[in-house]
Length: 232
Image (cartoon, rainbow, N blue to C red; front, side, top):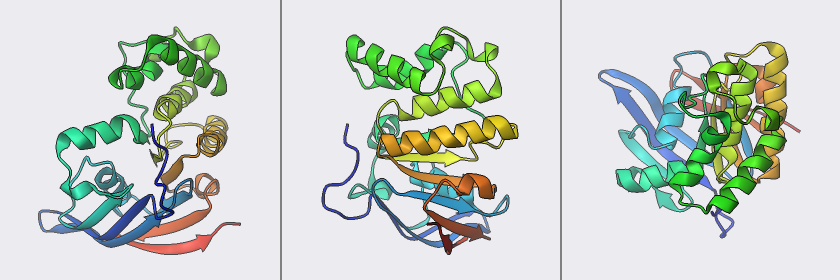
């Protein structure tokens, strides 16, 4: 499972990306470059286009204009089968409301992407056990999502997102449904684990504390993305 491009170029590059729903233009000429291992936050009010942007990068939405290049491939020209393959391994997502599979136990939720990748049972077990330990859920491995707290479910979702060692993690308001204590814990783990796994992070948030784990902060207003500040 490759973790990034080898030529020193950007991992992700957007050029003039636009997206409309009917007469309403949601994204307007988005320009963005993310390097391998970089952590970038996108801040902005609700309805500014942040989540639509992540959906386009993940291949869940198709831009009306422009180009999205990921690891040298133009995502706007890929078929659904190849996009699905990328989402299963090279691009992972963490959402505000977890999106766990309710009929699978915690251990099985984290294992699921590896089953789709047809990884051997021994390697699956080793990876899942290790990552559950990293997010502090080793003792909750057999719990159902319905038996877990919000903080536990988000840490489980984070483990699932990182289990394939993705080159890029897309996080959409990952602390939005958590209290401050659990939110801080999830942010710490998101920061530590993306660094440890050398994954780039693109974090959408309205929370300045969440954005603080990133090295670069951008701002989106009415579908326009602009540089806000650099974080030392």
